[in-house]
Length: 372
Image 1 (tube, rainbow, N blue to C red):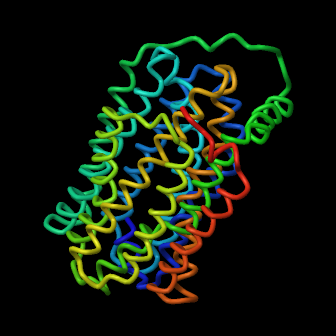
Image 2: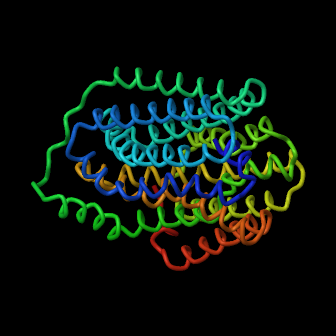
């Protein structure tokens, strides 16, 4: 989709708008979605959300299939992206809250690592296959396969057993319910500092939104090359996920988290300066390794530190910090590239990530002393 939009506009800001179109709806519904996940059967919320994403995929296919070209197709694309933002806003907290109902508490840490590894594996295969299919068979076929895969996921979801909601600690109004989730996050210094660190790292350090420009105009590798560039961070994340399965992060987890985010910023600076496709692939691979550490440590912290009856609301706050920061980070990257230029914007983002790590290390002393 990003390649399709950039091919129509040749404007980096249009790539940033993709992220913004998804982030705004997700943020708007995030807190209420957490309340829903804690007060309604979580599987039903997931079913409705995933069905909405399936309809959005069908919509993208139909728009592209019927399009005669030109910028008129942009508005419908952005509208559909907005609908996916609403769906993802409800999907994330519901999945997060359902997971501990399916898994024993003592297996949380290992389960989070497996979950992250499987997700990253899919994220490796998806972009690489998408780039190859797009480059050889075109956009219509790519969207068709996307519909089939989301449809398969929807069918498999139906086989997950229904789980009753955990007992409520007290009956509260909607406003009190939302306040309770926010209060828990902001009073827990370790969780707050961990997700804040990830927020600013993703906000400033991610160059993923600009990869179509690097593939098209700087590295000159086309849509197939774009698929490999998008897959490279996930390959690194899968490698690190496999290592963490056998060597879990326990001692000095906070310091490891800080060092990994700083290293992630460094790889982004190197990527911005690179004009070699293979060096860029390697740097993105390293970025995935370092990013995986942050994801695993943060996810484990939130799962193990959050009471069962608050998981949906805490997940929704986490989604505001982390999930939407990917899309807002895409907007920031597109805007910065428009103002500063492509390469300077990536270098600036990586530098800001390192600065955030330094500030966090100085301010969040409990995080630097964290062991898991």
